[in-house]
Image (cartoon, rainbow, N blue to C red; front, top):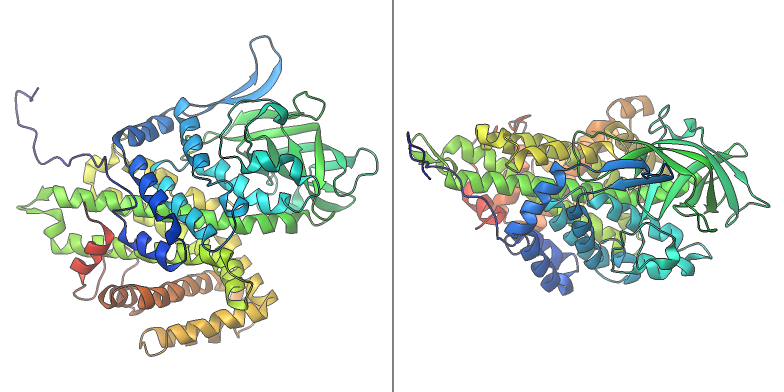
Length: 546
């Protein structure tokens, strides 16, 4: 029924029933280029499912109903459960069916990480909270594979069936693994942790321990096991802590409360206490931090992928809105200043996608110095930069919608609230930049290969060549000076790699627009500050077509 006082007009149709993969030319090109073209049919199929009206509505509902902690059952027995919206289980089931939690390890080979990354980029545009348990499980697999008892859990970890039942592994069809590292007094300073492990018997790798302490953030609390950092004998080791004790009772991991998070609402993070919980030492004793840092390499890649997904969806929503909304006699997409903003946002999204898939290939590739540099140096740098840029981009895309974008029944508030989490999780911005410097210093061969590749990729470009030279000169300064400018180092590494990738793989007009806006000194701190005409038509043609 129309309003009695006016006709409803100039409202943008809801973006539903579209294929997230077939409408993303940049992702399609990257999938082919980086070696996962064999997975395209599955990606197109999943892209159609994710873009359906029903799934998009379900994602909205899942994030309106946050999970709730249930420490006790109605009889007063300790159960330490989390209750989720039914849609949460559906999104995890969908992710498991795609193999997002295990496929890179259960079926390794050319393009395995790239194929998984592409699925992750699609799923993360629709429901980002369910990525957390998927990421934790996937990142735990290369560590658990090294344990002599891995074959006992291998069928469950590789299973494509999501099993939400809460019980011992013997009765389950699939399993998940979470992680517990940080404590309230230390955060990223893991050496300040106070959780302790005492051996039951001889101890050692594969031995049983009693774990006492707490974790301020425990990811994916309903997982069937967690990898937990705990100290023993003046060292820190990594422990596999199952949700259920081998004797069949629930392990003594007690949920204190669920975190009331700003975003990532569908997912649960909790505070827990370990009250002589049962755990098994994995990896080398005393190398727990190093073991979990190895795991963090994969989780940080997923932070880049997750932010790239949010960035892509925010830009798509902004472009869709601008194509349908009119103001001052013209559609928004036809107005020069709005075109400058949207073009800048689209360049950011393209650069992030190209980089994210290239990083994923580095995790597939042979262990050459350059691929090692992408994994060890560029991954934390990319986590710093792409996650930071996504926060700003989400706000700018919301502003394209105007007041309508600030209302909770549209997708923009959820994208905006979700954006900061990847910048914080798995190491905040400063931690990432310091890790970049540490990797540059400790792995000189990889660092040299990366800088040499930048010099080659930027050769002959008047704006890029001096930028590379300035970076090389800075890295030759005293350590205190370099650390002071660690954020600049990480930023320039990422921008230069993105520029090189776009010079090779994007149309010249698009690559030139990226380089001019990021390196000429005439671009802005906010999106849309440009120094001259930009090839907006070419950029939009690549970014989005309905």
